Image (cartoon, rainbow, N blue to C red; front, top):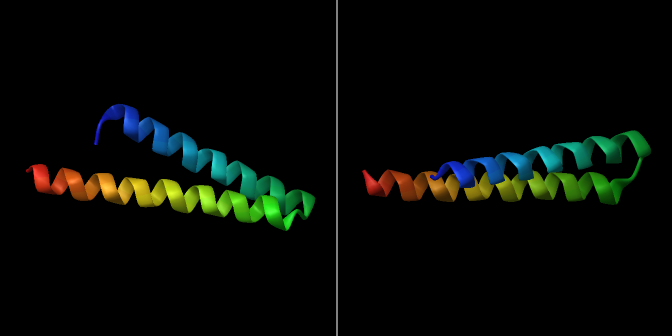
Length: 57
């Protein structure tokens, strides 16, 4: 996993965390769900990159 990918995934995860928190504070279910979705997407990308890295070794 390249450094650029790691940074992008971390940023996407952080964005999702912020959205989820904002949704909870404002009682906005849609925003909260979007945040959870962004986090899950970032986690899935990280897992995919980890699998690719495992096969490189």
